Length: 69
Image 1 (cartoon, rainbow, N blue to C red):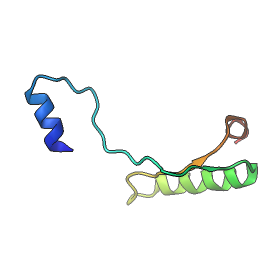
Image 2: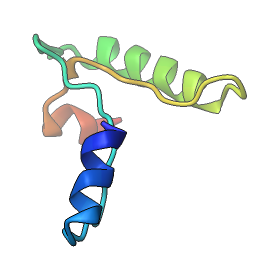
Image 3: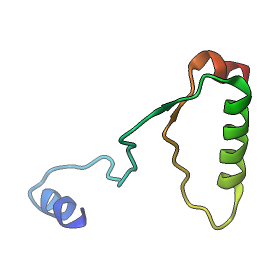
Image 4: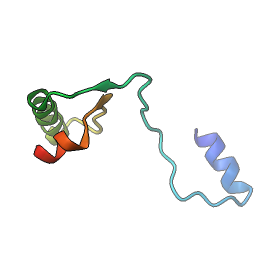
């Protein structure tokens, strides 16, 4: 990753943002409001933990359910 980024910068290519991200291969639909609430609570707790840098999820919660949370 860094070798490619540095080579591009040396060739004069401006890079606005460069990150390594986790992209799920399989998504899971979460259509139950209570289940979505529990998952979001877990994510919040994990994100607040001092030793956790990033939290990733392969769940797809519909906007209608997210608005209720």
